[in-house]
Length: 86
Image (cartoon, rainbow, N blue to C red):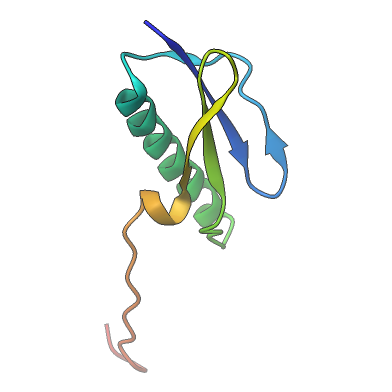
């Protein structure tokens, strides 16, 4: 199986040194979406959500083959319920 890497670009850059063996680019994109969702959850715990942060998908030659932003990986909605309403 091909090896893919998933670098994190969130203002700082973190290179994936291990990679993951996956069946194809579709599986690599699905893996990146899961990673982006995990990154989103981690940032929400800190009190913010940077939707432009992204996972960069690279093939085994370290060539960029795609990206997934946090905005692409999550569905979000904003509801205003007013004061004293649940």
